[in-house]
Length: 95
Picture (cartoon, rainbow, N blue to C red):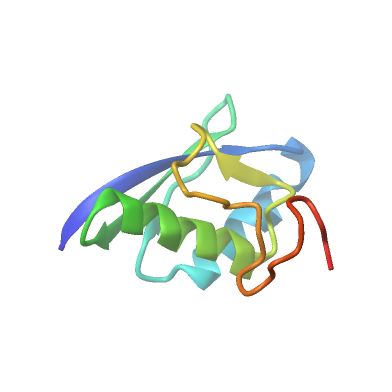
């Protein structure tokens, strides 16, 4: 395993403290930094490769329920990332 760094963008600056705190809680083995003046924060974690690091951060954001407040700073290369696992409906469908 090696250490990887993933950049995130925090939105809704007023509620970023709670979102960052929840992300830190659900990713205890990662080093989740504090957002800078532009809302960019860095997550450092151990993973076999960068793709797995992206998946772990994506899962952390989902588990923390902060996907309305935190997003990848650069669009991740995760195919069909908008789909809910196990759901075969049309793209963008919620149910």
